[in-house]
Image (tube, rainbow, N blue to C red; front, side, top):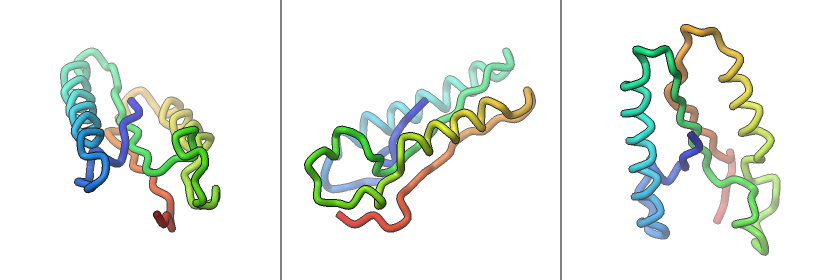
Length: 99
């Protein structure tokens, strides 16, 4: 599941968005626990500010965002892990993001 770093923080802007992402992360964790006996793995990919259309028109330089391709690379890496390796969460954040 792709969640959001807003599930882990309490930001002044977008609080209702953060609440929905927190609920999604909780659902992810419950699902992981319930499906583990059936050898189904459930991972939460938790990206921070990612260069998507939602940032269109911003003056923030592109190099300050997580790239969608980087998230895809992490996802592929998780899928390639062995059958007995569970990755619970991966948090990806831009190194020097400035709003």
